[in-house]
Amino acid sequence: MFLSTLAAQPTIGTKFVTVEGTVTVEGPRMPEGPLQVALVTIGGGSLLASEVRSDGTFKIGSVIPGHWHLVVNGVYLKSVTQGQRKLSAADIEIGEQEGLPLKIVVSPVTFATLRVTTAGRPAPKEGLFVFIYSDANPEGPEFPVTADHSGMLHPGERMTILTGRHLVCAFIGREPWMSGPSSYFQALRPNLERYCHTVEAPEGGEVTVQAVPAPLFPFGPMK
Image (cartoon, rainbow, N blue to C red; front, side, top):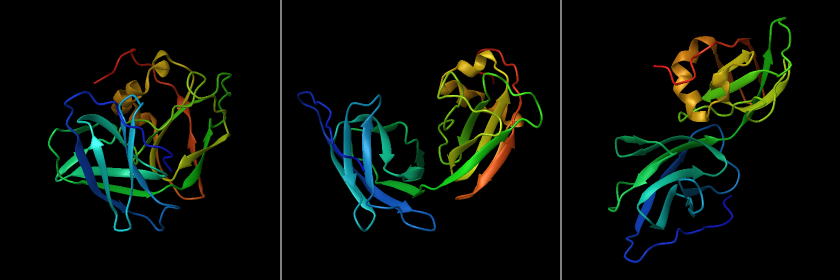
């Protein structure tokens, strides 16, 4: 639940617009509690939110034209479309003229377990480099797991992941490209896919992948 609504500070003569649309829930059950749709300024700082009505519609008023990040609380955000155009929830451009309604598709959040092994290889002292490309988040990897990012994952350890289809990349050894920003991992995806594993993570279940020796890439996005 979004606890507050913070408006951006307008300048004199600013034109406000209204953003409205519908939210459709796909999945075997409904999310717990009411849904809210929020627009957050790129980089944070300002938030405008609206609770989704019982008929699935929402309306957010007093939106300053510009670039916003769209969030729906407590669910997978599967897709955002406007007419025939697919939008990126990470950067939605709101124009000075009110556009077509947004169509948002979400699904309830459920979890599975991921286990990573090394198939008898010596366990590296620095841990394993693991990150996940999720079908639910086409903008980039879900979360890198290394000493440089959010901690270490050791062989045989388990981590909680969202259910659904994922491309799991698990590597033994440390290479310079592993310290790049998240956008760098996104650019590397076409080069990494042959080293990774596609898995279907069921709710409450466990999937296991085998880590492989880390490939060596030039430090820079590859085409």
